[in-house]
Image (cartoon, rainbow, N blue to C red):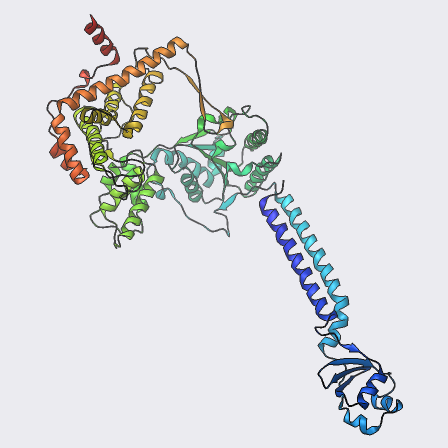
Length: 635
């Protein structure tokens, strides 16, 4: 099936040929058909017209005679080659006096048009055919070259002689201390391979970089190549696959063959999961071609000689879908995990991305790092870039702390929608909704402190409550999950408490709370059903990112799971209702301040907030206790 680029090239050539035809036709028309057709007369008629003194001028050019009459009409005739015109006219009986009055002029044969006319009839068709066949052969040659290059790998080369060098070292990669330590051995091996080979050591043939998107997998691989000073062949997993059978395998062979010629070298395959998924899950078509490409990669990686110094780096954020044969020792021996940066790592990353930017002297990068938990390196780069854009938009000459804090919210929630004006009723409902979230979060233990509360629309949200953790957390307890669900339902409960009805503003909160309750029951084993994991998730390859769940439990257990989820939600609603009812005046005070100022920062919120008596985690009822309380009430 021809590509769109080839179709465009053929169409362009056809249009060019059509224009050539049109030009040749115009030239032939110009030479073969004069604009004014001349009348041809006999020599005796010319003698008669001279006798009657109708002739204005006669031009003789060789044997051709051009006649111009007094009325500006034109005609032409011919004479014999051996005799002059005057002699021919005398032979026809015309007097010498009449001949002298006829105004006869002589013009020599020649000029460009004299030679171009006859030659163009022969040369132009010949040139046209030569050009036509040249275009055909050129197109055929291009197609043949494309056919030969079709199986070549389109890898980008960095670090070789004559190639543009962009130095990226480990100093340009902030954080990731453990990952860099793992890769220092690789760099040392590429620099001094004999040291390891003498000891009988086998260096890892493949290094798999695993981590969430934006954590610096590609950057770290390029840093290894720069530190070692070796050629770096970079290619994406999707660039191997084509519609034609065998192309992917051919490109794999070509890539490894090229890399071995320049060893020591590094092959980097980005997004390995595009071709490295578990085999046997496809349904014909392109999946068969993908599996053949994967088979060729397995063969090439397993076929390295012991002394080979060509290493394969690969990056993926989906190691769970990779084929087991790809992960076995001897192929990808070493797996390097790249986590999201902690607060110190985020601060270092921010400083790297701030290089070359005019920053204010009072910039506090620690505060920016504290407000960005869960951000990857790419997210932090986006924060710095958005801060610079905001400063430029305000015509400032430096980037201040204000722009950094605004850019965090822009990256998290989207830009401010100041044109999205709420009515008085909507504004009041949004204020009580966000005040409910903030108040429950401030009172209940085990939640993150409130940093900012706003009813200014951002992105898809009409308002938001920004919470920032005081410390990095890797594990969460059941009481913290219950507290989080209570905070999520704080806005829903506040609306119902104040207005005796609920709005659509709580839709996202209900979705998140329901998902959290479902995880508590089915994944974390934190319900009364015990420490059991329910459901097996499977990825449907032919549906892309779709995830299906295979039930490994009965319908009776499914009904119990639904009941447990509903109990968790009811428990969270009851906790939020209890807290807001006890602190109704404080809820009114926070909502009123929000209506007036639209935004409350941490310091002002803490000055408004004076809780009565904090609820201890033990007092947050579990679903089981709520059930027992209802039974006692009935009895």
